[in-house]
Length: 200
Image (cartoon, rainbow, N blue to C red; front, side):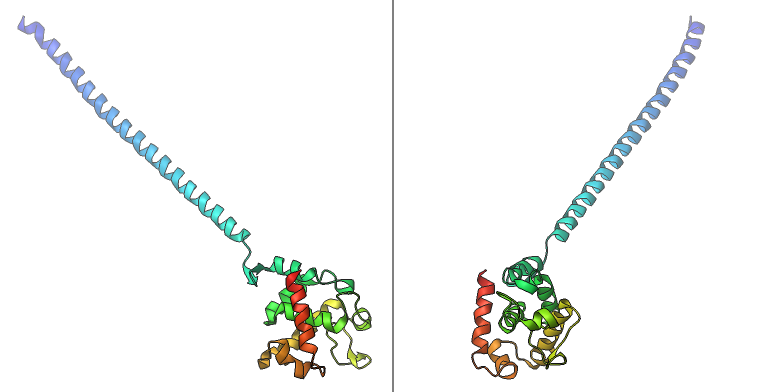
């Protein structure tokens, strides 16, 4: 009887061994699955974070900076454009951007252009024929300066304001008046245009 049990014991030992090996394999497989799942989740989280970061960057890029009086450059350009007619229609962006680049108040630059040229209604001969927007002295147009294009004339006018007035600390119409014009009411007229531009 005992002799019959020996083969059975051996078979049970082999089965138990196989079962143990299977359990070890199963445990390893479960751990590998868990690790793969965790890695997948981690990668998904990384992708989510990257997508959120990209979305935030896009939002930041879409938001234009405030450049003047609570406005973006585009808003400022549009505001100035409302006061520009005749020959200088649509030059708001150039006036706004170049004035800011040179440290010149864009409303004041626009107001001087309007006062000097009559461009609120119809631009003067100097603007139409000489591209001279600020009544700048020089040559090529009688005793006034001639410029090859309107853009060149606008930029030269703003350069003149920066070079001969702003750089000397003359930053308001009142301070600029004695040096720029003989008319003592010049600054009052320029200020009126500034208010018109602001109120448009």
